[in-house]
Image (cartoon, rainbow, N blue to C red; front, side, top):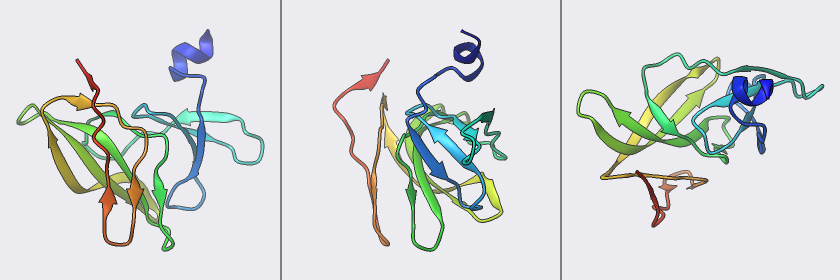
Length: 133
């Protein structure tokens, strides 16, 4: 029970290496990422983002491009307008804990995202027919 209440999930289903090439994380469809030692698989701490973005949910499967840039999406709430959106962001190099907003898709309701596709030119984001209320 300690693990559940401190990490909120014991099913970190996907391992990802962030853009700094040294931070390995476990992910779920939650907005949090858990740092994991890639050699011992010991869990460390939840990643602390160095930005003001407010992501409600995240995705299990982010994308790492050949140049090392890491892309992901989340359901984002803008506190100034109180509007929801799906936000595409990237992480780069040594500044791997600061999400850089690339694009947003306005949403009337928050949808549950799991994965998306990425090419050199486009992010392909599926808007599922179910929403959170």
